[in-house]
Image: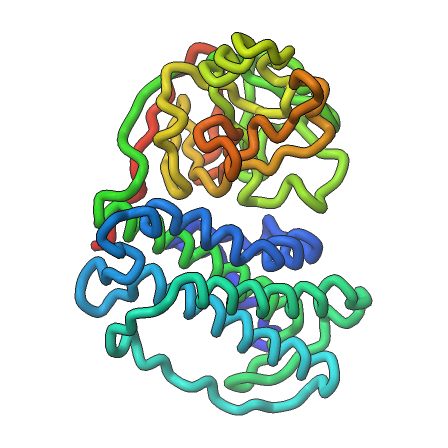
Length: 337
């Protein structure tokens, strides 16, 4: 093997597929590392008995330890990227062996997240300022060329993999989304922007609904944002408040009814028809959906201000076909084995 990018295969454990990622998606996702980790850890942080520092079983890190590991991984790959850019071809020799989980460390999760944010800002600054040819510069590790593109994809895989681990810990410790069921009220798509209009069938690939597009990939369209889900019951409540919102007008792809939306957490698995997706993060509202809200108050559906009212992004786990009226099954992630 002569090129480190050849080692980037789809992960059988977390589903990460490097083929779905472009350079912009990679850099922009790494910038949000601390936000994503905070979101997935939210039910553990909110627990009364400091679940954030509980190991789900001996030899498996706690959520706080996973967060600190992501900080270290970003730092290490940032070093490789900087070295590849400034001294391409530098031979680092053999990769040190991992020492496993090691001793249990009790950590301050806010300090860990601040550390992730610092490293994430630094790696984003480097990646977003690079010329196209710089992505192919490489260092040598274990006799293999590891390019900037490889290192950046590797660390975003590390982030996603450990987000899934955090979801499994939440399920093991009883802090994950409960099982629920509902139905699809409406499917929505557009060729960019809002509103999204009703469609009668959605063919869903790993990249989202086939034929549905975004005007920009800076804030949308990354693999963990393949779908946007929202609650028809929340829409009904907002209409009762006087907001002119309708299914699809705020940009969701799948409008679901009959689900306790406030009980959802990142990591939950949503099965609709023969398609399964994984909730990744609440969608941050922006001014483009302002016309759907009285007084243009689009922050009415900001998860950080009004938990239980926001839309959810999801990554597609198993592609499939979805139709209005299909049953929706929401389940917690698989626990740590």
